[in-house]
Amino acid sequence: MATIASSDTIEATPKAVRRLDVPGWAVAYLQATPLFLILGFFFLLPIAMIGIVSFWDYDFANIYPAFLTTNYTDTLGSWVTWKTYLNTLKFTAIVWMLTLFIGFWVAYFLAFHIRRTSTQMILFLVCTVPFMTSNIIRMISWIPVLGRNGLVNSALIDMGLIPQPIEWLLYSDFAVVLAMVHLYTLFMVTPIFNTLMRIDRSLFEAARDAGASGWQVLWNVVIPLAKPGMAIGSIFVVTLVMADFSTVQVMSGGQSASIALMMKNQMSLLQYPAAAANAVVLLVVVLLMVAAILRIVDIRKEL
Image (tube, rainbow, N blue to C red; front, top):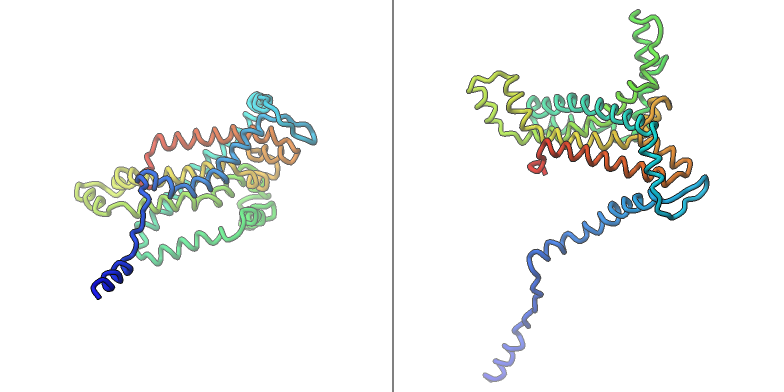
């Protein structure tokens, strides 16, 4: 009986499971492998292909694998390209300054003057309502407002402020900047608001107890602590404006140019290697701008 009981006990004991000893550093790499594969396939591989195609040759109908620097010399040696880059940088600088100014005050109002979280969420949802439609529809919605017979000109004429319609409200650089500010301000509001909500409110009380005025608290406490959010929003706005071609094309009526619009036109003419070379140059310029922003402001605490 004892022998039978002991044999049953041995059979009931589960077999020891062998575990594969994997170093801790290897576990982290294994967990990140799916992300690396996705980024490599959908991000790095397309960029590499653009870089390769930028050295190819082309004619009016085909592209030919080669290794030529003609596309880069034609791009960097053309005064049209430099003028287009300056125009694009002009749009970027103006839109960045306006979105930073508007976005900061909107985020400041939501963070410090709206106490209830539910009200903040409702106001954020209201801000995101226009994003439920495409950029083209939001741009076209400005045409009946800014047009020659639009709402603005009609109202100004009816009030007797102007004798005739203002021509530069639509199909001009003003219209391009206005549409871009409308499209991209939310990308500045969101990171700044997130940064402002993390600020310890006791710092404001300490500053006031030390005799600081409201503007001194804003300048010496709020703005320095909000710089990471401003930097993140600036990266969003700068990259979006530099790569925008539809807004420039629609709102300027073809009277203005940007580097992204130039690439779009090159692709329409089947000049893919030239467009790829422009894309590589644009990527380098944008990366330099982002590096300059990160050099000024440390955003690691926000990540």
